[in-house]
Length: 109
Image (cartoon, rainbow, N blue to C red; front, side):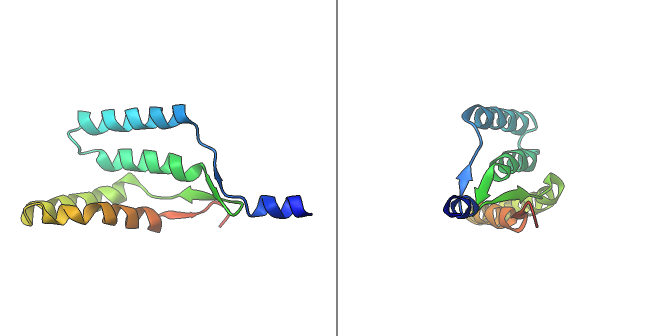
């Protein structure tokens, strides 16, 4: 009984280093070859891999975000960066994290 209880509250990550390297290289190549236009695609690939290999309190997480959704935000943010002479760029990493959180759920939900 105690072992079963421990399993339900375990949190762990089951991804591998070679997978991480592969997704990172692929994402970088796509990003640079498209002159950063497909950066949202790379973000989705890498984050989907990370989240889909994460278990919190015995429940696997799932990333539901789509690159098209992030692309719309990305274009707006890039325009705001240009308009504000780069100042809005300080907020973009936080905006991306908020978008990731809104698109992350439990797989069994």
